[in-house]
Length: 200
Image 1 (cartoon, rainbow, N blue to C red):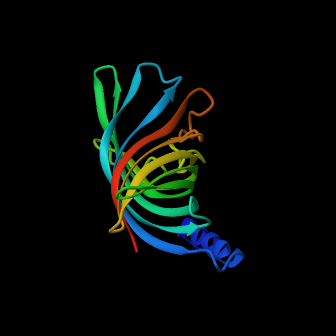
Image 2 (image 1 turned 120 degrees about the vertical axis):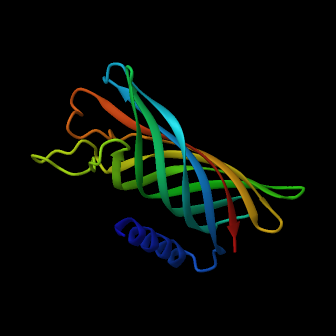
């Protein structure tokens, strides 16, 4: 809710700066493939597994070829964690607010666009499939994982004349997702996505 409110305030502020800026809204549905970039965790590995994402965006068209697009996305992510012969599925759901600075150019059937920008995310729940324990829950002031995330992403896509969109993206986190063991190891998010969208 905090991130959603921040996103609304940000978009309202941008609209106030230039009331003549064309503003459009849209919805997105994506399939994400996520895992973790690991360091200092010995034999542990993390492999990508699919999950869904759903949300919406606001596009501020600053010119014919440039726009700013904040988004609010709810996500469910999975990855396969392995440590030697032992494996388990990591499951997480949460919300993310990326802001893309986008360039676009006309094509014969619509327009091509590409964007880059930061994101802020928060996890609502995270656990392993075979362990009924929320990894964000604190014990002695420490949790197994940090629920907050920050990083950067890139996105490319194409919008057709009927306002339907296809897109693909990549995001990487810069915040260590470990909490209790972050002094000796690190775990950062990595996500690929493909999806569909519609701009009103």
